[in-house]
Length: 173
Ligand SMILES: [Zn+2]
Image (cartoon, rainbow, N blue to C red; front, side, top):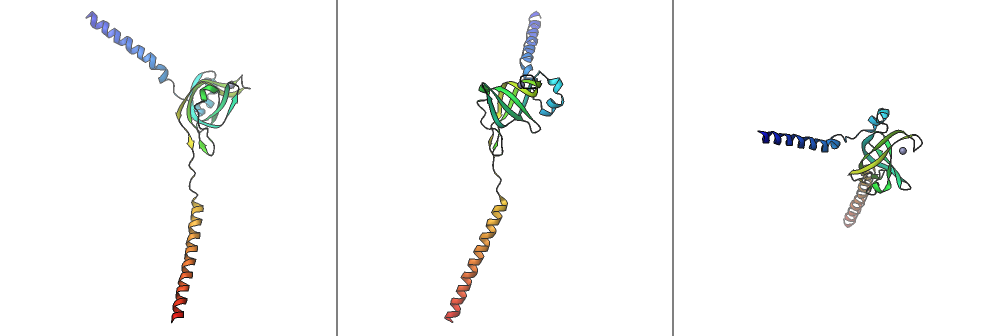
């Protein structure tokens, strides 16, 4: 009976240890830009996780860099050690789709280090999805125009061929 109880206690302790270990992952939920901006005072100086597409240029400032992360609603400036962003390949613009990344760091409603701007000082960066060069949609208008031109040209040639053929036949007669 005692050994049974001891086993049970061990199992409970193990369960608690396991919960303790996975706790940070359960609560590492990403927060949207809308949520951050609407509740900026609540999130001020707190560790948050934010996710979005890297857009625009990366601005290097010594050992640190500014990257812009857009989650389809707003763009938030992220201040990060340059060494942490070495794996970022694509930044979004009209030609490319930027890498999708997750940043974990401290949110500042009015950053004292950066002139009172709203920003995130990231200390962890994780690339979720690599960006790519955008596919340009086929310019249907141009293609239609070319097809019509070819049809007109082809019918003109056909008319000429038929005319010449008929002329030749008339001459023979
Ligand atoms: Zn800052």
